[in-house]
Image (cartoon, rainbow, N blue to C red):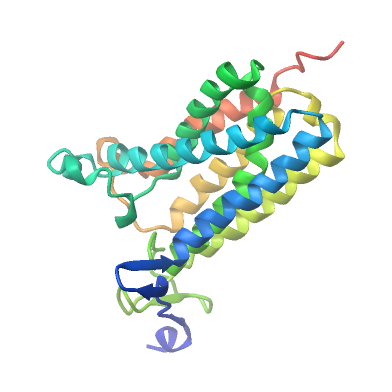
Length: 266
C-alpha cells in the first residue's frame, strides 16, 4: 500500500482534442513530430554533402511509407498473427494501434534500398548513415506517445518512481516507456555528435551499424522490465522475449558494420 501511495498516478488522456469523428492523439502528434524534426536534421546533412535537395523530399516519402507499413506488418506477423489471420480486414486499421519497431526498421531499410536504386544510384549505406541519426530521436518521441497511450507496460515495481497507469490497473510499474525514450534520446545525441564531429561519417555503414548496436542493445536490456507482449517467445521456452529475439540479429549486423575495415581507407 505504501508503494502505491508513493507511485506516480498516470491518467493522461491519449487524446489532445476530439472534434466529432476527428481525434488528435498524442501518439500521432509525436510520431509526426519525430519525422518532421528528422527531415530538418537530414536536410542539414544533405547540404553539408552538397546532395541534391530533391533527393531529400523523396527520401522523406520513402522513409515514412516504409516505417508505417513495416511497423504495422511487423506487429501483425511478429506479435499477433493468430488473431490477424482470422481478421485480415483489420490489418489496414493502423489508427487502432499496433506498430512494431522491428518491423519499422525492416520497412525503412527496404524502402531506402529501393530509394537508393531508383533515386540516388548510390550505395544504400550513404542514406542509411544519415537517416538513422534522426530515427533515434523519432524513437524517443514514439515511446513518449506510448506513455501517453498507457501502453507497452512495465513489470510491477517497488521503486519510488513507479507509475500507476490508472487506465489499466492500480499496479505500480516500471515506466519502461520513459526508460526507452531517454535512452533513445541519448543515442540520438551520440549519433549526431559522431556524424558532425568525427571522421567516422566517412566510413560507409559505421553510423548505421552503431545505431543498430545501440538501439537494439538497449531494447534487449529494456525487455527485462516489460510485461510480455506475446509473439513467438513461447517457442523458445520463454527464455527470451519476442523483442529480444528480434533484436539480436540487428545487433549482430550492427557489429559487422562497426568493426569491419573502412572500404574507403587508403
